[in-house]
Length: 440
Ligand code: HSE
Image (tube, rainbow, N blue to C red; front, side, top):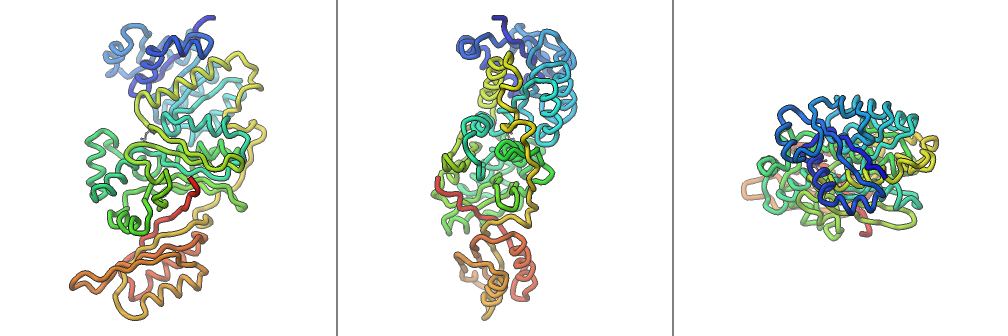
């Protein structure tokens, strides 16, 4: 059978990894796919042309004009590995309009414009595959879409940003501040010069939005995701959490409730005995709770040339196998048949239900704790654990930390406002959400 021809948009980290895997494992990949997967063309930036020539040893037609790849009659699958929204979006839509299948690693593009892209692909009868967009080398898209297809998915919770996990791990292991840990991550090349997307939870929210769409059969709704990053976390909160037996991780959580879907990214206390609490450094992990299978945990590298390339190549193989199948018989892009998607409500963060870690600085005098606990009791919030440290020498204020039972976030908002208004409390109350995430 003739080889299937791939056009790469981008031959950087992920494109280079993809190319290297296809070259190294050419024979086995062909035996699996049923035909050879051949990189026919690649578009790169002017400045990368020379390096691209070396990487591909003259075996790939190179261009600096991505339109040439998208419009080429010699390309069956366009692999968009350039990132960013523009011109990636226009190129992907153009490839679809030309009847080409698309593979993309671009989570921001799908979270923001996936609904439009999948609609266009469905109408044109082509596939858009995106395993590499979520958690790098972990095959979580295939797992959710196919392996767990029997299940009613109840919730997903994941460490899906390696950079922020690396920073949190450094803060815990070595007691360094957030800014020191960030600087170190930047010097090691884990964090970008502008780290905003990674540390403010935006990258994780893109990935979570995609997983929620597949898990629950809802459109991509990134704009409704609650996003809070790690830049305001302090080493002392990490230490106090440890005293209660918890680790703090940046989690993406999406959960089906009777009132709607929760879609949120924020630092989270997790019991230290959970496997996911021990996922350290740049590694990623995703917990999925299905009604039939129970809780499953998926762990691996969330970034890097070959781990991400592994997912891109898996998509290329899938498309190669399915290209000749009737579109109606293919696995639907978002797991559910396109006419069976539901527009379930995504809850505002005030409506989510979870437990909380609260840290406040209180003047050490009679009645302070009684005032705080009365506020919580009046709002129906139950305290699960509490810690008060002796004041340091010459200090009249003490740290008071409380863990609450599960409550609606709106109640905690009210409680915090009332606690902060007490004369006996100094400064703002720190709030970190807490999830038991049992039983794995
Ligand atoms: N910047 C991401 C991370 C990797 O730190 O996990 C690509 O999604």
